[in-house]
Length: 313
Ligand SMILES: C[C@](O)(CO)[C@H](O)COP(=O)(O)OP(=O)(O)OC[C@H]1O[C@@H](n2ccc(N)nc2=O)[C@H](O)[C@@H]1O
Ligand SMILES: Nc1ncnc2c1ncn2[C@@H]1O[C@H](COP(=O)(O)OP(=O)(O)OP(=O)(O)O)[C@@H](O)[C@H]1O
Image (cartoon, rainbow, N blue to C red):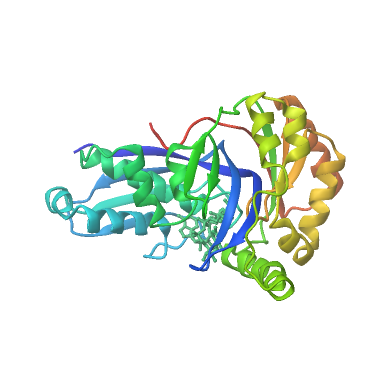
């Protein structure tokens, strides 16, 4: 049986609005999710044992059952015991290029790659909706990561509506190596600061329609209007993460001053991105920011928006 190599792209959030509280402890969201070309590579091969073995030399990546790629393989074994009995265990080798705990869905895209890879290796013939339903069990960002591209995500992030792909723009990403943000912490703090206060003040749970500008945002994407997109990017979690991490707030300010179409934190952070019209513009902003901040802890990437989800090499 042949091994498979999977390309698992990261995502950025172009838009993240928290519109409500949910009984299951999650938040109701309206998001625009966007794949980027920065990607991890995962190789899966049958190992002739009854076990999942994960190999990765990145110091921040766990190798046990807390790894989302490992959990995705466990889920496939549980859902398809006959295929597992026929094909046996797998070795997963993860080449981690997406920064960890960065707001770029690194773990989620790895999980998505394992679902897609085992579907192929075990010849299951699962449809995209079926793969996405499996992905939901692993995390809110996983369903998006399977198909990637540009999508409107609602619910807790798992309900997806595709929109026109926005693959003509470039992006500069910047992240302090020593700063990692926990997604549960960001949402729990949001809940304490905004949702619970709302309940206290209004006597009812927070539930609003998308108040900011997701409608105009979708229109700007359809028109491929980079300037408008840059003006309308929005992330409610910035209200939580930026005050807690002043270095990230300062990085965001500096990148914003340097130009591009728009600058924002991705997801629960702490990665900050600037959207650009061209690669040259992105490289220039990266160079200037590097000179201005001059901190070896700060890492930059220049990459392009992508219309791809998980790809088989
Ligand atoms: C920040 C984003 O990455 C933006 O795309 C996502 O909203 C989070 O996606 P994710 O990491 O796949 O999230 P999950 O693994 O499903 O949940 C992690 C934690 O985030 C919180 N969470 C997540 C999604 C959501 N709609 N509401 C939440 O409150 C919950 O506390 C949950 O325990
Ligand atoms: N395959 C994986 N790759 C990276 N981290 C993983 C993986 N599996 C589990 N983890 C753990 O999950 C934590 C969050 O890592 P991840 O890179 O997925 O965060 P993130 O990009 O902020 O996620 P999201 O954007 O979906 O909220 C890490 O601190 C790490 O311990």
